[in-house]
Image 1 (tube, helix red, strand yellow):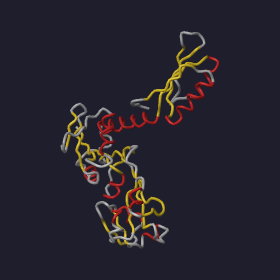
Image 2 (tube, one colour):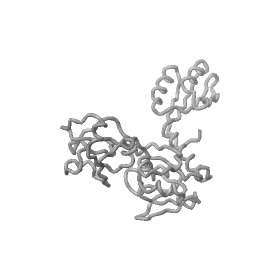
Image 3 (cartoon, helix red, strand yellow):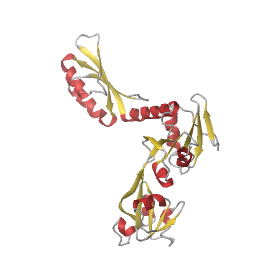
Image 4 (cartoon, helix red, strand yellow):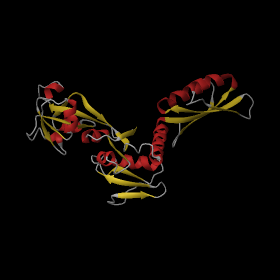
Length: 280
């Protein structure tokens, strides 16, 4: 059995449960339960604060966990990064009042700054002496309330900062997303590897689609060049002489353009279907 930490709330909670469910795990939380045991997969899931997960995983209390990369960096822990996930994207940005004359991050560093991620902020400015006001949340209101002159906060759309009368300065100090981590020494555990493989398969499935079509022999080579697949397309002769059936994986973002090209060269019965999961 392995023990795996999951976010107990916030923007990572629902996407994490959806991902696990799509990978065949049963991690649905009932009420305020702190843990769930998935008997079929022999995994015990623990619901923890996202910021606490790096500590539990790094110290071997739990075998693996899913949390944001910013939480790992802020805690100064060093679990093994197994897989970047495609949700929970955010940026850590500096912001000042819209009428401020500050124009650079270097200027911001000289101000009194409110932030909930002081470790990342200090690391970015490489030990520079700074006046930081450490807050747990609602960082953007600190300037209006007079306890800070600038903020360095997690930004999604930026709307909250705008509503607080702030504007972003410079490039993000840190970019984050959800990720799967393991305790160092447990990366090769069979069950941890299985979890990683299942998640990789789901990520591939979300990026690709399956295209199938019938093509005359005269244009088979051209069609296969349009849909080369991962290794190569699957080609099977049809009952009608001189015709073939072709199946290949194509990238989702290119799928409709590929269907148009296949149609133009005379392919028939062109179908595009989603892929539930994959092993490449």
